[in-house]
Length: 111
Length: 115
Image (tube, rainbow over all chains, first blue to last red; front, side, top):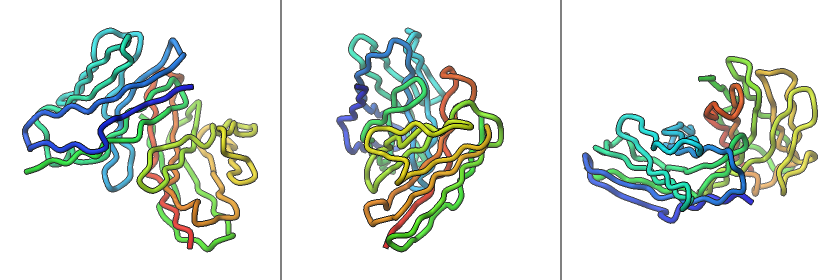
């Protein structure tokens, strides 16, 4: 069975600082993808970043980057230069088509 | 990327009634999914909506409670039947363009409250 675990229910960071959100997963699939989604209070699920499991290079999207450790089944998200608009629930997800989500990390940005 | 519209965005319903949620994608997609997000919880997959055939349900979800239709490649509906307060959740539609090399995008969700 596929599982995704986010061990940090809540995180906070000062504006302009860097924060890292943790995620571990377990899967028997050989071909899969990993995702970080952001859900603000508006409840829309917004794709932040995606990593193909077969790629060794870590994905980056502007201020967002991941640390993908395939052997350890770890997929953390680093947010640099945090902005007030980054405040949201962040969900880690894994799958090729059907997605399994972690429990989420609520990120607060302190001005 | 595909733009996904859901209707209604929210509703308040009486116990024992049914509600149908619509999901419209602005382009043809290969796969559509329905997820449930209970209050303060993560997303759980209800089913995969298959075009022209019966949906594929995940463990714990049944067709009698959550009938799903997908008449074409851009549209799907989810009905929540005989609702109880435990059905109060956000229901989200998602779509996958192409195959698994494309990211999955979500609609804005339907917030459902049962009195």
